[in-house]
Image 1 (cartoon, helix red, strand yellow):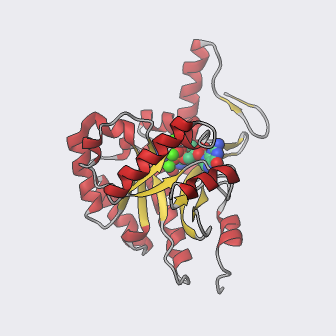
Image 2 (cartoon, helix red, strand yellow; image 1 turned 30 degrees about the vertical axis):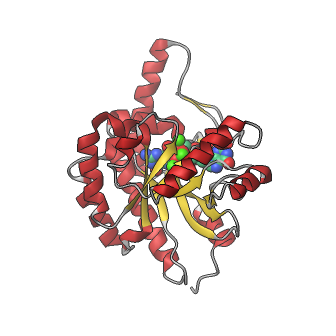
Length: 278
Ligand code: C2E
Ligand code: CA
Ligand code: CA
Ligand code: CA
């Protein structure tokens, strides 16, 4: 692996041997990073389409590499999943998000929930009780924690995954189905899972103002969600035109660069929370 200065970290090359080598390097680097606590959570606001009122935030992990700078989760989560390191990283993310939101909720009139991404690889017999410990330790109410899980991998082992999700849901934690529409799960599976929210993938929002098919898909998702009493968040809203369209379709909440990119903790406090007593 070689550093590329500021933003990029060149782990992969076209050469096969190099690639294997780099993957090993990345795995070792990840082990080191867990010890050295080089991860950080950024937060992206979820807001009301009509009023821009803050409804919650999604936690998105970043790796502050000492040489390479900020490394995106797309570049290391897959390796973390393959190596099992996702468990340590995922537990850390849950601890960090829960304690931050416990603190942020102490002085709020209206409760602010946090959504944490969870990989299907993190699901196991021990996971529900670990989450309970993390919640108890942080003091955060389970109702203020939401777990985002992507549709596709969930369908590989439906029965077992339903069991694990039910055990977590029994703690009072809600689930959101992430990247909804990109997997190809049948709707009959969807209703087996304790899901209370759908997140419409950015792929359908991107061209929603010009592509009538995308508009129709979003319309259909909203109609289905409504009749199943599911909440909906539109992802990746970048323009005022997209937001206007979502309002017209009565999609009640969204996140995206149009309102704010994911930002670090201090910036989130400064931009979106009322000043807290010291
Ligand atoms: P995701 O959960 O679908 O997160 C949404 C991604 O879209 C984030 O990328 C976010 O920064 C980006 N995004 C938000 N608004 C916009 C927009 O308006 N336009 C565009 N172009 N992009 C937008 P990010 O932060 O790079 O995360 C990538 C993926 O990494 C996430 O996709 C999620 O699957 C995974 N991830 C992030 N944090 C964690 C984590 O703590 N644990 C696990 N297991 N996965 C994580
Ligand atoms: Ca997500
Ligand atoms: Ca998503
Ligand atoms: Ca995604």
